[in-house]
Image 1 (cartoon, rainbow, N blue to C red):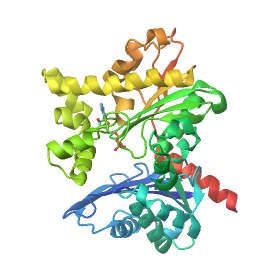
Image 2: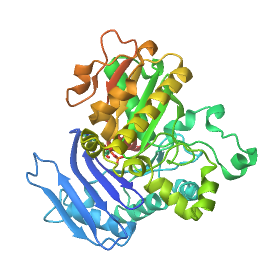
Image 3: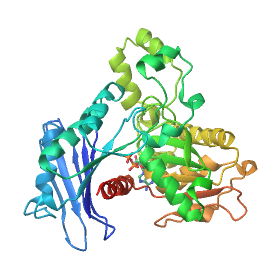
Image 4: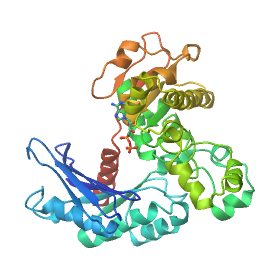
Length: 404
Ligand code: ADP
């Protein structure tokens, strides 16, 4: 069974074609800078079957509809293509950022599902319109091919009301649906299952703290396999410090900045999303650059590192109090999987809470899921490479196969 996973971001389209029976990725592509003067499309094909098939070209991509057509063309064209015809694809898995309270599991795409996704646009004005375009154009490009929507928010729908409500006037929730939704759910879910596999424990009997540190960063407290709290909130701006996003700040800063720095609401929103976080403090958002600067004595880079890891460590402590007993802490995504310094600082001094890293294991680079805690650590500490595309593809397969 061949499944195409489609991830329409606010200005990009990532796609991955998987052969579910061979358990392999046939092709992996990304179209970037959609809507700008020059964009790029890159596609990498499975190296065993298509050696040297790593292609990239500059191309202007007007909008997400054009991006979808470009993807379909690249998957089948003579130079880059991996398919004779798009009809070889058995199912489509669409990532949808915001599912609101309506979706607590993946759904086969129907006109009603499309309508419900449309209704959640006010909650995710940058992302859900792009996701919807992906779904609608796919219906035209892949007629008759079943599609499944997998929501970033669905894993977090088990969070209890005491944790998802904000202490605001109740009508903000009842009338405007303002509450914590949480994001990166597909990653937290995948990591939960992979961590339990590695530990040899049933998902329903395992308590975890999952730590997704990539460009966006979030953590989840997972009790008996079900999410009970997460750091992102009404939007993906909340919680941990991130590459360019501020995470939690005093909400009164908004009004103060508007008055004293004379910024509009839209400008403040842009600063908090694009010019804050690691970038705001030290001008860099890639930890490889930040460590290189720290080594040269750059104090801002050092401060950014300390602020970032302090927040992760503080949240580990908070989630230990939420869960009471924790089987494992699982680090994932670009930083979580690759950055030994961040992991070490995030776990530093937590011995009395039962967390002891093995510094050799933490610093040795190896592929796959693995343990990095000391033998006498009560809490396991794991590195779990995330695979959101595989999670979406597996959910898609399960629903499509059930239908027949
Ligand atoms: P996205 O959220 O876009 O999927 P990723 O999960 O790929 O992001 O994470 C990207 C971030 O991972 C980079 O900004 C960088 O800080 C970090 N990163 C990637 N590789 C390394 C590495 N080898 N060492 C330290 N940090 C890394």
